[in-house]
Image 1 (cartoon, rainbow, N blue to C red):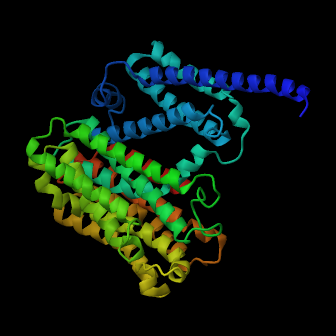
Image 2: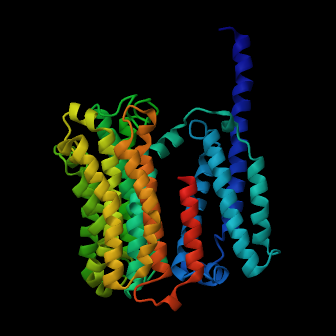
Image 3: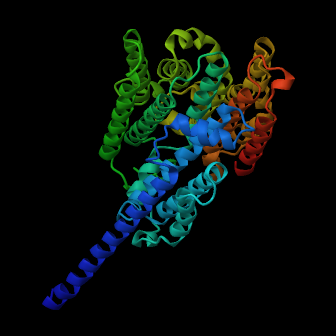
Length: 480
C-alpha cells in the first residue's frame, strides 16, 4: 500500500472518530434534557408524582388506572432513553434504534407536557423543555442512522422476545389490582416497580437461554427461527448466555433492594420465592433435564406466571401479614389470564409440532397430536371466559366481565392457530398473534377490576374507567 493511501486514510479515520464523538455529545445533551423534562431531580417519588400530578390530571380515572398509565409512559421513557444512549455508537445504533428513540422520547415528552400544563401551567421551564425535546429529536441524525442492517443492540432486543412479555403483564397487573381490592394495599410504588422489573428480567433471561438451547439442539435454523440473532451470527451463544447471567443478577439485586423494610421473618420466604422463579426460568430449557423438552412446559408456565408471580408480589409489594392470606383468591382471579398465557406456548408448540417430533422433543402438543392439541388450545382460549363469569357471580366482582369484550379475539386466535395452514409463511406469526391476545385479555381484565372492583354497586362504577377501558380495548383490536 502506498504512503499516499496511509495519508488519505488517516484524516478519514480522524474525521470519522470526530463525527462519532460529536454524535455522542449531542446524544448526551438530549439525554440530560429529557431527564429534566421527565422530572428527574424534582424531589418527587413515583408515588408522589402519581398523587400530586398524574391523579390530579386524570381525576376521572380510578387511582389504579392512573398508576398504570404513568407506569406505561415511564417504561416508554426508559426504553427511549436507552435507545438514545446507544444510538450514536457504531455497531449498536442503526436507523431503527434512532427511530425508536425519537418515537418513545417524543411520546413521553408529550405526556409530560400535558401533565405539567394541567398542574403547573404551560410556562414553567420543564413544560417548555417538553416542547423543545420532540423538535430536537426530529433533527437528531447521528451517522448510525444511515445503517439499515440489524445492529448488535437491536439483535439483543430481539433476543429478549418482547411479544411474550404479555404473558407477564397479565398476571402482574391483575394480581396488584386484586390485592388492592382485597385490602392488601401496595406499601411502596418503588418496591412494586422493582418486583415487576425483576420478574421481567427473569423472563428475558429465560427467553435468551431458550434461544441458545434451541440453537444448540438444532431446533432453530434459518427457516424456523423466530429469533434470528444466533442463526444469522449477529450474536454468539456465549454473549447471549452472559447476557442472561447479567439479567438474572440484576433481578437478584432488585430483590435485595425490596428486602429493606420487610420484616426479617419474611426474608427467607422472599428469597425462596425468587429462587423458585429463577430456577424455573433457567431449567426450563437448560441442564441435563430441560423441562420444556419433556412435555413439562405447560406446568412450568403455570407455576411461574401463576403461584410464583402471586407469591412474589404479595411478599415484595404489600404487607405480608395481610397479603399472604389472600394469595388463593388472587390466584383465582389470575387463573383465567393464566390459561390464555399457556396458550402462547401451545401456539408455538403446534406451529413447531412436526419439527419438534423430528428432533426428539416432547411437548404437550406432539403428545396429543395435531387434532387433540388444537382442541386443547381451543379450551385454553375459551375456558377463561367461562371462569370469569363464575368469578363475577361468586365474588361479586363484575369488573372482571370486561374480559368478555375479548371473546371475538379469542375466537379469531383459535381460527388462526387451529385452522391456519402450517405451510403458509404467515403461520410463523401465530405466537405473536396469541401473545397479543394475552396482552388484550390481561389488560382489559385488570382495567375492568379497577373500574368495578369487588363488591362495587352500579353507582360505584367509574365511568371514566369504563370509557378509557373501552378506548384501550378498541386500540388493541386496531393494532393487533
